[in-house]
Every structure is written in C-alpha cells, then in structure tokens.
Length: 114
Image 1 (cartoon, rainbow, N blue to C red):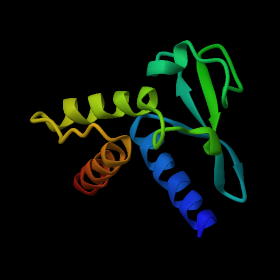
Image 2: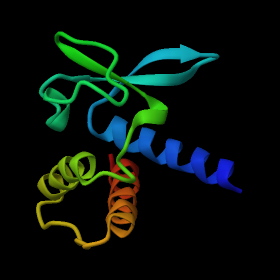
Image 3: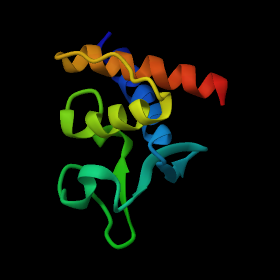
Image 4: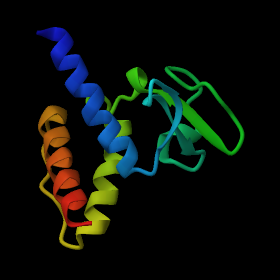
C-alpha cells in the first residue's frame, strides 16, 4: 500500500512540476526521472541539497526529491501561481496535506480548460 501511495505522490508532484514550468530532464524508457527548472524558480535559487544536481541557468531535481506534498517552501509558489492564474484565488488551508489536494484539484481543472 505504501508503494502505491508513493507512486501517486510522485505522479502528483510531476503534475505540479509541469504546472510550474518544469521540463523533463532525464528519461528512462520515456519516463522522466528528473525535472529541470529555471534558477529563478522560487526556493531553488538558494537550495543546494536534497535533489539539486545542477547549477547555472537551471536546476535539476530527481522526481523522488520533489517535495510539493510535504514542504510549504515548495508548495507556496504553486499556490501563488494558481492564485494569479485564477484571478479570484483558490481555497487556503492551514494543513499542508489539504492545501496540496486543493492545489492538485486546481491544476487538474486548469489543465482540462487549457
């Protein structure tokens, strides 16, 4: 059961990474194993551990190291982008698990419309 949950978290984090402008960096059998982001992407300007494997004009994060589901520093830039795109805002929660689900719901809705 835990492995299925881990797979779902990775799939959802990939969805968020793509929403945030991440591009697949390395692939194994057409499946991305890492995503590249511009250096100006939120918190990644200052982080140099926990998945950071590059430098220069972009940063590269292994998919297992994406922390949207567990770290407010990762999730809040996503909330800010969703707020900006929605024009009216999205729901907010004090609980990261709930906010993560709200963000995922918004991104799925956004992707279906665009």
